[in-house]
Image 1 (tube, helix red, strand yellow):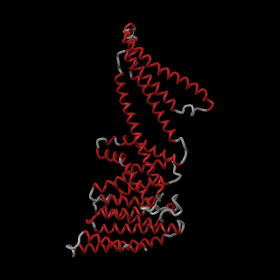
Image 2: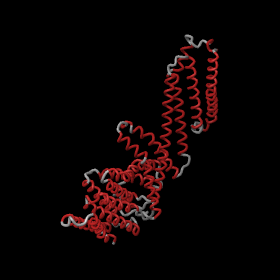
Image 3: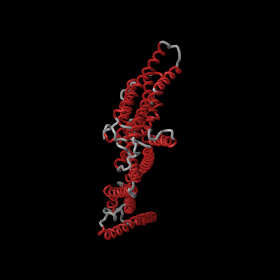
Image 4: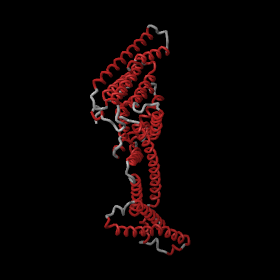
Length: 478
Protein backbone atom coordinates (compact mmCIF):
# COMPACT_ATOMS: atom_id res chain seq x y z
CA UNK A 1 0.00 0.00 0.00
CA UNK A 2 1.57 3.28 -1.06
CA UNK A 3 2.00 6.01 1.53
CA UNK A 4 0.32 8.45 -0.86
CA UNK A 5 -2.60 6.18 -1.65
CA UNK A 6 -6.16 7.12 -0.77
CA UNK A 7 -6.54 4.15 1.56
CA UNK A 8 -4.44 5.89 4.20
CA UNK A 9 -7.08 8.61 4.48
CA UNK A 10 -9.76 6.17 5.58
CA UNK A 11 -10.75 5.94 9.23
CA UNK A 12 -8.79 3.38 11.20
CA UNK A 13 -9.67 1.00 14.00
CA UNK A 14 -8.62 3.58 16.61
CA UNK A 15 -11.74 5.67 16.09
CA UNK A 16 -13.80 7.62 13.63
CA UNK A 17 -11.37 10.53 13.65
CA UNK A 18 -8.31 8.49 12.71
CA UNK A 19 -4.98 10.17 12.03
CA UNK A 20 -4.26 13.64 10.55
CA UNK A 21 -5.12 14.23 6.92
CA UNK A 22 -2.53 13.12 4.39
CA UNK A 23 -1.55 16.57 3.10
CA UNK A 24 -0.72 17.80 6.59
CA UNK A 25 1.26 14.67 7.36
CA UNK A 26 3.11 14.96 4.07
CA UNK A 27 4.23 18.50 4.94
CA UNK A 28 5.37 17.44 8.42
CA UNK A 29 7.21 14.45 6.97
CA UNK A 30 9.00 16.55 4.34
CA UNK A 31 10.16 18.99 7.03
CA UNK A 32 11.59 16.17 9.18
CA UNK A 33 13.25 14.37 6.26
CA UNK A 34 14.77 17.62 5.01
CA UNK A 35 16.20 18.45 8.43
CA UNK A 36 17.64 14.94 8.87
CA UNK A 37 19.17 15.07 5.38
CA UNK A 38 20.77 18.47 5.96
CA UNK A 39 22.02 17.37 9.38
CA UNK A 40 23.59 14.28 7.82
CA UNK A 41 25.53 16.44 5.39
CA UNK A 42 26.58 18.90 8.10
CA UNK A 43 27.65 16.12 10.47
CA UNK A 44 29.56 14.35 7.67
CA UNK A 45 27.11 11.44 7.72
CA UNK A 46 25.41 11.61 4.30
CA UNK A 47 23.69 8.25 4.76
CA UNK A 48 22.04 9.33 8.03
CA UNK A 49 18.58 9.84 6.57
CA UNK A 50 18.54 6.54 4.64
CA UNK A 51 19.91 4.51 7.55
CA UNK A 52 17.49 5.96 10.09
CA UNK A 53 14.59 5.72 7.64
CA UNK A 54 15.29 2.01 7.05
CA UNK A 55 15.54 1.02 10.73
CA UNK A 56 12.73 3.26 11.93
CA UNK A 57 10.54 2.41 8.93
CA UNK A 58 10.73 -1.31 9.68
CA UNK A 59 9.85 -0.56 13.29
CA UNK A 60 6.80 1.45 12.26
CA UNK A 61 5.78 -1.37 9.92
CA UNK A 62 5.86 -3.74 12.90
CA UNK A 63 3.67 -1.39 14.94
CA UNK A 64 1.27 -1.05 12.03
CA UNK A 65 0.91 -4.81 11.54
CA UNK A 66 0.16 -5.36 15.22
CA UNK A 67 -2.30 -2.45 15.19
CA UNK A 68 -4.79 -4.40 13.07
CA UNK A 69 -7.65 -5.95 14.98
CA UNK A 70 -8.20 -8.79 12.51
CA UNK A 71 -4.64 -9.48 11.43
CA UNK A 72 -3.81 -13.04 10.44
CA UNK A 73 -1.05 -15.18 11.87
CA UNK A 74 1.36 -14.28 9.04
CA UNK A 75 0.94 -10.53 9.56
CA UNK A 76 1.32 -10.90 13.32
CA UNK A 77 4.41 -13.07 12.91
CA UNK A 78 6.09 -10.49 10.68
CA UNK A 79 5.01 -7.67 12.99
CA UNK A 80 6.50 -9.29 16.09
CA UNK A 81 9.67 -10.19 14.19
CA UNK A 82 10.12 -6.60 13.00
CA UNK A 83 9.62 -5.15 16.47
CA UNK A 84 11.98 -7.56 18.22
CA UNK A 85 14.74 -6.96 15.64
CA UNK A 86 14.40 -3.49 14.10
CA UNK A 87 12.34 -2.16 17.00
CA UNK A 88 14.99 -3.26 19.48
CA UNK A 89 17.68 -1.70 17.28
CA UNK A 90 15.74 1.58 17.15
CA UNK A 91 15.29 1.77 20.92
CA UNK A 92 18.95 0.89 21.49
CA UNK A 93 19.88 3.66 19.06
CA UNK A 94 17.76 6.13 21.01
CA UNK A 95 19.27 5.08 24.33
CA UNK A 96 22.90 4.27 23.45
CA UNK A 97 23.69 6.81 20.71
CA UNK A 98 24.11 9.77 23.12
CA UNK A 99 26.91 7.87 24.90
CA UNK A 100 28.76 6.73 21.76
CA UNK A 101 29.47 9.82 19.66
CA UNK A 102 29.50 13.54 20.23
CA UNK A 103 26.52 14.04 17.95
CA UNK A 104 24.72 11.01 19.38
CA UNK A 105 22.04 13.13 21.06
CA UNK A 106 21.19 14.71 17.71
CA UNK A 107 21.07 11.33 15.97
CA UNK A 108 18.83 10.01 18.72
CA UNK A 109 16.54 13.01 18.36
CA UNK A 110 16.27 12.61 14.60
CA UNK A 111 15.48 8.91 15.00
CA UNK A 112 12.76 9.80 17.52
CA UNK A 113 11.33 12.38 15.11
CA UNK A 114 11.16 9.85 12.28
CA UNK A 115 9.60 7.30 14.64
CA UNK A 116 6.94 9.77 15.73
CA UNK A 117 5.94 10.84 12.24
CA UNK A 118 5.95 7.21 11.10
CA UNK A 119 3.64 6.32 13.98
CA UNK A 120 1.34 9.11 12.86
CA UNK A 121 1.25 7.69 9.30
CA UNK A 122 0.53 4.19 10.61
CA UNK A 123 -2.13 5.57 12.97
CA UNK A 124 -0.55 3.80 15.93
CA UNK A 125 -2.59 4.30 19.08
CA UNK A 126 -2.13 3.43 22.72
CA UNK A 127 -3.84 0.04 22.31
CA UNK A 128 -1.46 -0.95 19.52
CA UNK A 129 1.53 0.11 21.59
CA UNK A 130 0.29 -1.99 24.53
CA UNK A 131 0.01 -5.01 22.23
CA UNK A 132 3.53 -4.37 20.99
CA UNK A 133 4.95 -4.24 24.51
CA UNK A 134 3.15 -7.43 25.56
CA UNK A 135 4.20 -9.19 22.36
CA UNK A 136 7.85 -8.14 22.73
CA UNK A 137 7.95 -9.41 26.32
CA UNK A 138 6.38 -12.73 25.31
CA UNK A 139 8.71 -13.09 22.32
CA UNK A 140 11.76 -12.43 24.46
CA UNK A 141 10.64 -14.92 27.10
CA UNK A 142 9.97 -17.63 24.50
CA UNK A 143 13.33 -16.91 22.85
CA UNK A 144 15.15 -17.41 26.15
CA UNK A 145 13.28 -20.64 26.89
CA UNK A 146 13.90 -21.93 23.38
CA UNK A 147 17.60 -20.99 23.57
CA UNK A 148 17.92 -22.83 26.89
CA UNK A 149 16.12 -25.88 25.45
CA UNK A 150 18.31 -25.87 22.35
CA UNK A 151 21.40 -25.56 24.51
CA UNK A 152 20.26 -28.55 26.56
CA UNK A 153 19.60 -30.54 23.38
CA UNK A 154 23.04 -29.67 22.02
CA UNK A 155 24.67 -30.64 25.33
CA UNK A 156 22.84 -33.97 25.38
CA UNK A 157 23.80 -34.50 21.75
CA UNK A 158 27.48 -33.82 22.46
CA UNK A 159 27.51 -36.13 25.48
CA UNK A 160 25.61 -38.80 23.56
CA UNK A 161 27.97 -38.58 20.60
CA UNK A 162 30.98 -38.87 22.89
CA UNK A 163 29.45 -41.91 24.58
CA UNK A 164 28.71 -43.50 21.21
CA UNK A 165 32.28 -42.91 20.10
CA UNK A 166 33.42 -44.83 23.17
CA UNK A 167 31.05 -47.69 22.37
CA UNK A 168 31.72 -47.82 18.65
CA UNK A 169 34.38 -50.36 17.83
CA UNK A 170 34.35 -51.94 21.28
CA UNK A 171 36.00 -55.33 20.86
CA UNK A 172 34.94 -56.80 24.19
CA UNK A 173 31.80 -58.90 23.56
CA UNK A 174 30.44 -58.21 27.05
CA UNK A 175 30.86 -54.44 26.85
CA UNK A 176 29.51 -54.43 23.30
CA UNK A 177 26.40 -56.30 24.41
CA UNK A 178 25.91 -54.02 27.42
CA UNK A 179 26.20 -50.86 25.30
CA UNK A 180 23.74 -52.23 22.76
CA UNK A 181 21.20 -53.05 25.47
CA UNK A 182 21.58 -49.57 26.97
CA UNK A 183 21.04 -47.82 23.61
CA UNK A 184 18.13 -50.12 22.79
CA UNK A 185 16.43 -49.35 26.12
CA UNK A 186 16.91 -45.60 25.66
CA UNK A 187 15.40 -45.82 22.16
CA UNK A 188 12.41 -47.75 23.48
CA UNK A 189 11.84 -45.10 26.16
CA UNK A 190 12.09 -42.28 23.61
CA UNK A 191 9.56 -43.94 21.28
CA UNK A 192 7.18 -44.58 24.20
CA UNK A 193 7.38 -40.92 25.16
CA UNK A 194 6.79 -39.82 21.58
CA UNK A 195 3.74 -42.10 21.25
CA UNK A 196 2.31 -40.39 24.30
CA UNK A 197 2.77 -36.94 22.71
CA UNK A 198 2.04 -37.63 19.04
CA UNK A 199 -1.63 -37.59 17.92
CA UNK A 200 -1.30 -40.84 15.98
CA UNK A 201 -4.79 -42.09 16.82
CA UNK A 202 -6.43 -38.72 16.17
CA UNK A 203 -4.91 -38.54 12.68
CA UNK A 204 -6.15 -42.02 11.75
CA UNK A 205 -9.34 -42.47 9.77
CA UNK A 206 -12.35 -43.04 12.01
CA UNK A 207 -13.14 -46.48 10.62
CA UNK A 208 -9.53 -47.64 11.26
CA UNK A 209 -9.04 -46.22 14.73
CA UNK A 210 -9.97 -49.44 16.54
CA UNK A 211 -7.37 -51.47 14.66
CA UNK A 212 -4.78 -48.70 15.09
CA UNK A 213 -5.48 -48.59 18.82
CA UNK A 214 -4.83 -52.34 19.08
CA UNK A 215 -1.57 -52.02 17.15
CA UNK A 216 -0.45 -49.13 19.32
CA UNK A 217 -1.23 -51.12 22.46
CA UNK A 218 0.86 -54.04 21.21
CA UNK A 219 3.71 -51.70 20.29
CA UNK A 220 3.63 -50.03 23.70
CA UNK A 221 3.78 -53.38 25.50
CA UNK A 222 6.71 -54.48 23.35
CA UNK A 223 8.59 -51.22 23.93
CA UNK A 224 7.89 -51.40 27.65
CA UNK A 225 9.27 -54.95 27.75
CA UNK A 226 12.45 -53.79 26.00
CA UNK A 227 12.74 -50.78 28.29
CA UNK A 228 12.38 -52.85 31.47
CA UNK A 229 14.13 -55.97 30.22
CA UNK A 230 17.32 -54.20 29.13
CA UNK A 231 18.40 -53.14 32.65
CA UNK A 232 17.49 -56.59 34.00
CA UNK A 233 19.77 -58.27 31.45
CA UNK A 234 22.54 -55.75 32.16
CA UNK A 235 22.36 -56.40 35.90
CA UNK A 236 22.36 -60.15 35.26
CA UNK A 237 25.46 -59.86 33.06
CA UNK A 238 27.26 -57.80 35.69
CA UNK A 239 26.42 -60.30 38.43
CA UNK A 240 27.50 -63.23 36.26
CA UNK A 241 30.71 -61.46 35.32
CA UNK A 242 31.60 -60.62 38.92
CA UNK A 243 30.84 -64.19 39.94
CA UNK A 244 33.09 -65.63 37.23
CA UNK A 245 30.27 -67.65 35.66
CA UNK A 246 30.64 -66.05 32.21
CA UNK A 247 33.98 -67.74 31.65
CA UNK A 248 32.17 -70.98 30.88
CA UNK A 249 30.18 -69.35 28.07
CA UNK A 250 31.73 -69.24 24.56
CA UNK A 251 31.51 -65.43 24.27
CA UNK A 252 34.87 -65.18 22.53
CA UNK A 253 34.34 -67.95 20.03
CA UNK A 254 34.97 -67.49 16.31
CA UNK A 255 31.26 -66.90 15.61
CA UNK A 256 29.74 -65.53 18.84
CA UNK A 257 32.58 -63.09 19.58
CA UNK A 258 32.49 -61.17 16.26
CA UNK A 259 28.66 -61.24 16.31
CA UNK A 260 28.54 -59.64 19.75
CA UNK A 261 31.26 -57.12 18.81
CA UNK A 262 29.19 -56.12 15.76
CA UNK A 263 26.49 -54.84 18.12
CA UNK A 264 28.72 -51.82 18.84
CA UNK A 265 29.09 -50.77 15.20
CA UNK A 266 27.61 -47.65 13.59
CA UNK A 267 25.39 -49.84 11.42
CA UNK A 268 23.58 -51.12 14.54
CA UNK A 269 23.73 -48.20 16.99
CA UNK A 270 23.35 -45.39 14.44
CA UNK A 271 19.78 -46.18 13.32
CA UNK A 272 18.69 -46.75 16.92
CA UNK A 273 20.01 -43.35 18.02
CA UNK A 274 18.43 -41.66 14.97
CA UNK A 275 15.04 -43.20 15.81
CA UNK A 276 15.31 -42.03 19.43
CA UNK A 277 16.29 -38.47 18.50
CA UNK A 278 13.63 -38.20 15.78
CA UNK A 279 10.92 -39.52 18.09
CA UNK A 280 11.72 -37.02 20.84
CA UNK A 281 11.89 -34.06 18.45
CA UNK A 282 8.63 -35.04 16.76
CA UNK A 283 6.94 -35.38 20.14
CA UNK A 284 8.20 -31.99 21.33
CA UNK A 285 7.02 -30.38 18.11
CA UNK A 286 3.58 -31.95 18.56
CA UNK A 287 3.36 -30.64 22.14
CA UNK A 288 4.39 -27.16 20.99
CA UNK A 289 1.86 -27.07 18.16
CA UNK A 290 -0.88 -28.35 20.43
CA UNK A 291 -0.15 -25.62 22.95
CA UNK A 292 -0.12 -22.88 20.31
CA UNK A 293 -3.35 -23.98 18.66
CA UNK A 294 -5.36 -25.14 21.66
CA UNK A 295 -7.70 -22.12 21.53
CA UNK A 296 -8.79 -20.10 18.54
CA UNK A 297 -9.20 -16.39 19.29
CA UNK A 298 -7.58 -13.12 18.35
CA UNK A 299 -5.52 -12.91 21.55
CA UNK A 300 -4.45 -16.54 21.26
CA UNK A 301 -3.29 -15.94 17.70
CA UNK A 302 -1.29 -12.93 18.82
CA UNK A 303 0.37 -14.90 21.62
CA UNK A 304 1.06 -17.83 19.33
CA UNK A 305 2.71 -15.54 16.77
CA UNK A 306 4.87 -13.90 19.45
CA UNK A 307 5.97 -17.27 20.85
CA UNK A 308 6.70 -18.61 17.37
CA UNK A 309 8.88 -15.59 16.58
CA UNK A 310 10.89 -16.17 19.76
CA UNK A 311 11.48 -19.82 18.91
CA UNK A 312 12.40 -18.97 15.32
CA UNK A 313 14.93 -16.35 16.45
CA UNK A 314 16.49 -18.80 18.90
CA UNK A 315 17.01 -21.24 16.03
CA UNK A 316 17.89 -18.86 13.18
CA UNK A 317 20.13 -16.34 14.99
CA UNK A 318 22.95 -18.81 15.87
CA UNK A 319 22.90 -20.20 12.33
CA UNK A 320 22.95 -16.70 10.81
CA UNK A 321 26.02 -15.56 12.78
CA UNK A 322 28.05 -18.70 12.10
CA UNK A 323 29.80 -17.14 9.04
CA UNK A 324 30.67 -14.12 11.21
CA UNK A 325 31.71 -16.10 14.26
CA UNK A 326 35.20 -14.60 14.21
CA UNK A 327 33.92 -11.06 13.62
CA UNK A 328 33.37 -9.67 17.12
CA UNK A 329 31.50 -6.56 15.94
CA UNK A 330 28.78 -8.53 14.13
CA UNK A 331 28.41 -11.06 16.95
CA UNK A 332 28.30 -8.25 19.51
CA UNK A 333 25.64 -6.30 17.60
CA UNK A 334 23.44 -9.37 17.19
CA UNK A 335 23.87 -10.32 20.85
CA UNK A 336 23.12 -6.75 21.95
CA UNK A 337 20.06 -6.42 19.71
CA UNK A 338 18.49 -9.74 20.67
CA UNK A 339 19.81 -10.03 24.21
CA UNK A 340 19.30 -6.50 25.56
CA UNK A 341 17.22 -4.79 22.85
CA UNK A 342 13.85 -6.40 23.69
CA UNK A 343 14.26 -5.44 27.36
CA UNK A 344 15.01 -1.85 26.39
CA UNK A 345 12.06 -1.91 23.98
CA UNK A 346 9.65 -3.07 26.68
CA UNK A 347 10.93 -0.51 29.20
CA UNK A 348 11.05 2.53 26.89
CA UNK A 349 7.83 1.85 24.99
CA UNK A 350 6.15 0.84 28.25
CA UNK A 351 7.10 4.24 29.67
CA UNK A 352 5.33 5.77 26.67
CA UNK A 353 2.18 3.83 27.53
CA UNK A 354 2.39 5.07 31.12
CA UNK A 355 2.93 8.63 29.86
CA UNK A 356 -0.27 8.40 27.81
CA UNK A 357 -2.13 6.97 30.82
CA UNK A 358 -0.91 9.86 33.01
CA UNK A 359 -1.86 12.40 30.36
CA UNK A 360 1.72 13.52 29.79
CA UNK A 361 1.68 12.33 26.17
CA UNK A 362 -1.49 12.94 24.12
CA UNK A 363 -2.99 9.71 22.87
CA UNK A 364 -4.49 10.96 19.64
CA UNK A 365 -1.59 13.33 18.85
CA UNK A 366 1.12 11.09 20.26
CA UNK A 367 2.95 10.65 16.96
CA UNK A 368 3.25 14.39 16.17
CA UNK A 369 4.20 15.13 19.78
CA UNK A 370 7.01 12.56 19.68
CA UNK A 371 8.20 13.89 16.31
CA UNK A 372 8.32 17.47 17.57
CA UNK A 373 10.07 16.41 20.78
CA UNK A 374 12.63 14.51 18.70
CA UNK A 375 13.52 17.64 16.74
CA UNK A 376 13.91 19.61 19.97
CA UNK A 377 16.25 16.91 21.33
CA UNK A 378 18.19 17.03 18.05
CA UNK A 379 18.56 20.81 18.45
CA UNK A 380 19.93 20.30 21.96
CA UNK A 381 22.36 17.67 20.69
CA UNK A 382 23.69 19.90 17.91
CA UNK A 383 24.73 22.47 20.51
CA UNK A 384 26.56 25.69 19.71
CA UNK A 385 28.59 24.19 16.88
CA UNK A 386 25.77 24.45 14.33
CA UNK A 387 23.54 27.39 15.32
CA UNK A 388 21.71 27.60 11.99
CA UNK A 389 20.73 23.94 12.18
CA UNK A 390 19.72 24.37 15.84
CA UNK A 391 17.32 27.16 14.91
CA UNK A 392 16.02 25.15 11.95
CA UNK A 393 15.28 22.16 14.21
CA UNK A 394 13.44 24.36 16.72
CA UNK A 395 11.39 25.91 13.94
CA UNK A 396 10.83 22.47 12.40
CA UNK A 397 9.50 21.14 15.72
CA UNK A 398 6.97 23.96 15.90
CA UNK A 399 5.97 23.45 12.25
CA UNK A 400 5.55 19.69 12.62
CA UNK A 401 3.39 20.08 15.70
CA UNK A 402 1.32 22.86 14.13
CA UNK A 403 0.53 21.24 10.77
CA UNK A 404 -0.07 17.83 12.37
CA UNK A 405 -2.50 19.12 14.97
CA UNK A 406 -4.19 21.21 12.26
CA UNK A 407 -4.60 18.03 10.21
CA UNK A 408 -6.01 16.29 13.28
CA UNK A 409 -8.50 19.08 13.77
CA UNK A 410 -9.60 18.90 10.14
CA UNK A 411 -10.04 15.15 10.48
CA UNK A 412 -12.02 15.54 13.70
CA UNK A 413 -14.34 18.19 12.24
CA UNK A 414 -14.79 17.04 8.64
CA UNK A 415 -13.70 13.39 8.63
CA UNK A 416 -11.80 11.74 5.79
CA UNK A 417 -14.27 12.05 2.95
CA UNK A 418 -14.31 15.82 2.13
CA UNK A 419 -11.50 17.21 -0.02
CA UNK A 420 -9.38 19.49 2.20
CA UNK A 421 -6.03 19.46 0.44
CA UNK A 422 -6.07 23.15 -0.56
CA UNK A 423 -6.97 24.18 2.98
CA UNK A 424 -4.18 22.06 4.43
CA UNK A 425 -1.63 23.22 1.87
CA UNK A 426 -2.47 26.87 2.52
CA UNK A 427 -2.03 26.46 6.25
CA UNK A 428 1.09 24.33 5.82
CA UNK A 429 2.82 26.69 3.39
CA UNK A 430 2.03 29.61 5.68
CA UNK A 431 3.44 27.74 8.67
CA UNK A 432 6.60 26.78 6.80
CA UNK A 433 7.01 30.36 5.58
CA UNK A 434 6.80 31.72 9.11
CA UNK A 435 9.20 29.04 10.30
CA UNK A 436 11.76 29.82 7.59
CA UNK A 437 11.49 33.55 8.32
CA UNK A 438 11.98 32.96 12.03
CA UNK A 439 14.98 30.73 11.36
CA UNK A 440 16.60 33.28 9.02
CA UNK A 441 16.04 36.05 11.58
CA UNK A 442 17.54 33.94 14.35
CA UNK A 443 20.54 33.02 12.18
CA UNK A 444 21.02 36.70 11.33
CA UNK A 445 20.97 37.69 14.98
CA UNK A 446 23.42 34.94 15.84
CA UNK A 447 25.74 36.00 13.01
CA UNK A 448 25.57 39.58 14.24
CA UNK A 449 26.28 38.49 17.79
CA UNK A 450 29.24 36.30 16.86
CA UNK A 451 30.65 38.85 14.44
CA UNK A 452 30.16 42.45 15.50
CA UNK A 453 29.50 41.68 19.15
CA UNK A 454 31.83 38.70 19.43
CA UNK A 455 33.04 39.67 22.88
CA UNK A 456 29.54 40.06 24.29
CA UNK A 457 27.30 37.31 25.56
CA UNK A 458 27.84 33.59 25.40
CA UNK A 459 25.57 30.71 26.15
CA UNK A 460 22.94 33.06 27.52
CA UNK A 461 22.91 35.00 24.26
CA UNK A 462 22.39 31.84 22.22
CA UNK A 463 19.56 30.77 24.52
CA UNK A 464 17.98 34.21 24.16
CA UNK A 465 18.12 33.98 20.38
CA UNK A 466 16.61 30.48 20.44
CA UNK A 467 13.84 31.72 22.75
CA UNK A 468 13.22 34.59 20.36
CA UNK A 469 12.87 32.14 17.48
CA UNK A 470 10.27 30.18 19.43
CA UNK A 471 8.37 33.39 20.24
CA UNK A 472 8.35 34.29 16.55
CA UNK A 473 6.81 30.91 15.80
CA UNK A 474 3.91 31.41 18.20
CA UNK A 475 1.64 32.82 15.42
CA UNK A 476 1.64 29.33 13.90
CA UNK A 477 -0.80 28.17 16.59
CA UNK A 478 -3.29 30.77 15.37
